[in-house]
Length: 224
Image (cartoon, rainbow, N blue to C red; front, top):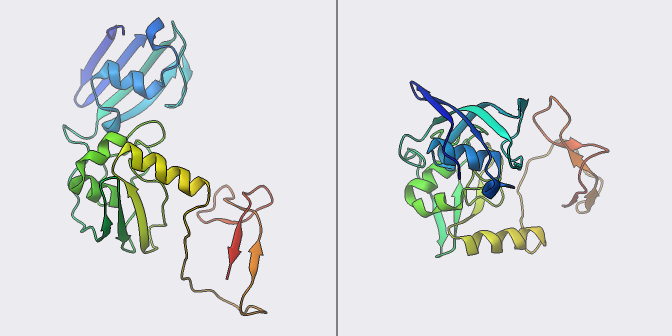
């Protein structure tokens, strides 16, 4: 791996610029930025990143000879995430995963680009189970160990992986619909029948916070 050709520090922000070596072909942008800046990817905050002068995404794969440039900072300042001030209600604990009861008003994970924001369930879990930080990677910088989520204002059980085996197993079970989930909700209006099914595509319209029935949405089945 090549050493950074340019890395100047301004307060907590580093300007990083380097050329991708042949050995690093196929690596993600954020992986190489972390390696060249010396900042753990789970704590890396990136701004204004470009590849060959064009704006790039952190998940983009790199080619040999590409020139990567951006501004980065270490949001963790030496720790994966700050200890959370919120309690964690553990319902079941195993070596590979835990089941926790999330309280209403608590976000499951921080927003993209701010992986160390305190007060989230994942920050509380990392304080209690630091090994979860080892699962950060690919799409999971802000949510290591999280395989499914529930909305901030919703309470309920959440499965969280503690090991690579647990992560892969839970992901597979959820993908294959082997995990059964039930929700208790309040609805407005009146159903014509006391029980039934609602089959409709669900998606998020641009500018809207909540999901709704959209023609281009994902297939969905709700039994009530």
